[in-house]
Image: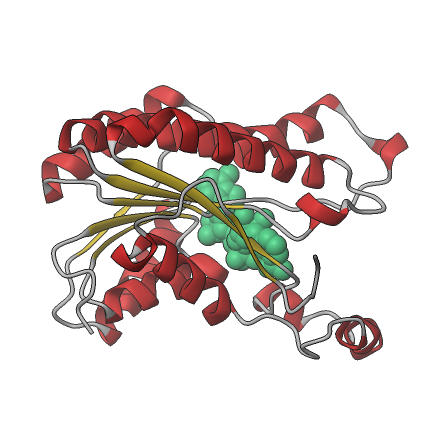
Amino acid sequence: MNKFLNKVVVITGGTRGIGYETARAFLKEGATVVVLGSKKESVDKALQSLKEEFKEAKLGGYYPNLASLESVKADFKKIHDEFGAIDVLINNAGVSDDHHFGDYTEELANKIIDINIKGVLYSTLAAYPYMKEAHKGVVINTSSVVSKEGTTGGVMYPTSKFAVNGMTISLARELAKDGIRVNAVAPGVTYTDMMKAVPDEYIKPLVASIPLARLGQPEDIANAFLFLASDEASYISGEILHVDGLVRC
Ligand code: NAD
C-alpha cells in the first residue's frame, strides 16, 4: 500500500479498458493519477467513477489531441502546474485495426500513426522537460504481443507497435543520462469491454493456444505497469515485458 504516495502518474487512454484499470491500480498505491482521454465526456465519466471508489484520491483529467505536440505540451504544462511533478508517464492510448492490406487508405494509416506512434512520442516529449529537470522519471509504453508475432491483416497495428518497441529501446538509451527509465509492456489478448462482444467460438481456440490457458485481464497488465514504475524495477530500462500467458525463448 502507498508505494506511489505523492507520485504523479499520467495515463493516456486512462478512461477505459487497460488504462482505467491501471489508474485504479496506481490509486490503490496512493498515487496522484491524471487520466487522459480523447473527449471531455469520457474523461469526466472516468473521473466520476474513480472519485466514487477512491474518495480521498488526488485526481486530474485532460483530453489533449495526442496527434498535436502543441496540444499535448499545453496540457502537460497544466498538469505540472496543478500537481508539481510528472513522475510516471504511461503511454497506453491506442487504436487497433483489422483492415485487409488492399483496403488501406492514407486516412486510415494516418489515424494509427497519429495515436499509436505520434501519441507516444509527443506525450513523452511533453513530459521530458519536467522529468529531466527533476533528474528522475519513468516512461512506460504499451506495445503488444503482435510486436513479436505480427498479424494476418491490419498491418499498420503491428507496424505501430514495432515502432513503439524501437522508441522504447532507443529512448531508454538516450534518456538514461537524465535519470529516466523507459520500458514497455506488451499485452496479449486482454479481456476489455471490446472483447466481451467476441463470440465464444473465437475465444475458445484462442485460449487453447495459450499455455497459461486464459485470456489476460486488465489487472494483469496494470500489475506489470505498477512493477515497472516502482523502485523494485530501478535497474530495468529498455525492456519489452510480455504479459500474454505465452511461453517463448
Ligand atoms: P480500449 O479501446 O479499451 O482503450 C483505449 C484507450 O485509448 C481509451 O481510453 C481511449 O480513450 C484512448 N484513445 C483511443 N483513441 C484515442 C485518441 N484519438 N486520443 C486519445 N485517446 C485515445 O483499449 P485497451 O484494450 O484498453 O488498449 C489499451 C492499450 O493496450 C492500447 O495501446 C492497445 O493497443 C494495447 N493492447 C491491448 C490489447 C487487448 O487485447 N486489449 C492487446 C495488446 C495491446
